[in-house]
Length: 269
Image (cartoon, rainbow, N blue to C red; front, side, top):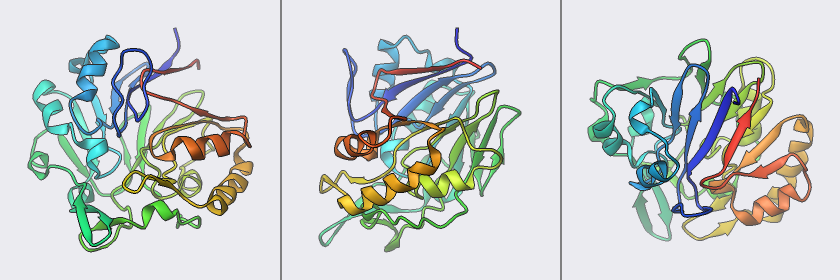
């Protein structure tokens, strides 16, 4: 039995009889916690959890990575199904968030009605949950500037992703869990408190789901070159990286893998 097991319950692609949907949710079992990192956009997380024999009523900790519905859309329904888990989220995640398409703004924000739920913990920056778990926000400006972020707004201004947080799971090996990595995977890695993680799992946000375009090859090349400094980390990417960018990056880095819905990662400490 591994000390840490990560199961993808929601992702853009799926294996077996699981349902694929644009979004993300990881179920994480550690020696001390049963965690949901993100919840996906809808009831898909409940359907897939049942198929994977995951008891969501036993979850004690929920992390919402940022304020977009494809990561926290199922929060209201989860709080009805589980009245004991603590939900950690940056308070700015409940600000109005939009995706811009031509002259239109598409609402991609969270349901603000859950803010006052007693189990929701509103954060303003980093948070130590316990000996095993901590949350942190990126403190290093994103120098890669993914084009996929250009369409994202907070209200009517460009999103600065202050609402994005990342999870560190500490043991003999340290695991970093990201949602979309809007702040930039390199900026997030440089913001990790302490030593470099052994694993980094999450999206790189180099794909725009609205226009279905991957960022220009030049940006992928710059990202690829920056990842050369992290050859000792095992990366499992997904969701907003997109399959085109994944093929490009994994063709240049043997330590970059893909985790789709239904897949599991087991880490022995």
